[in-house]
Length: 203
Image (cartoon, rainbow, N blue to C red; front, side):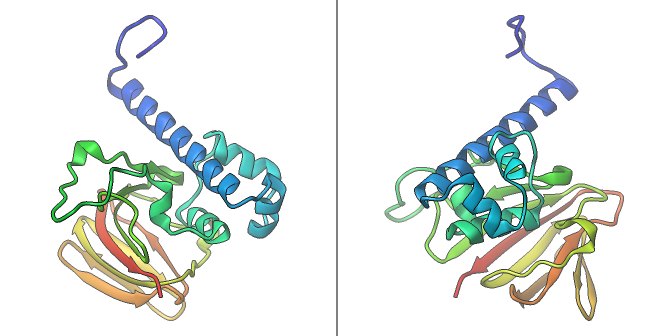
């Protein structure tokens, strides 16, 4: 709701959603940092970035890239799923996650991550990624590596995955598996949005 009591519409509504999601991610990262007993300076040193940059991310003033987010959770010693809302209690048998009930995490370049599991799972990250046209997982063509084994399938559009020795282009319905320790980056070089579903198993 805006200051005059009216509801935001169109682009204003979209901006409000992005700003709120950025703040929510920042708040969650701050909670995780404090739970890990780390100061802003200590976390910044682990990441090799300035204290100011960490502070801006926690305040929602700056959205991290996919690569920076993964570096953050690695430095904090938590799985990627920990940055999402914590969801409800563990399901006894069957759990359904409605699209309207799972708030996405908004990253640099408009990349969205949405957790598909009802709550964080031990040793497994199950999520959906959305890459707008021209977006990438890391800046300056940097390649990313992290813990785990990654399996994914593109459900909409076209997603390009660049490795050190090859580039793979995935269309809707295509799937890929690879060890996360293999340096890589993801990008959408097309003119339409790319959506993919991912399962990362931590070893």
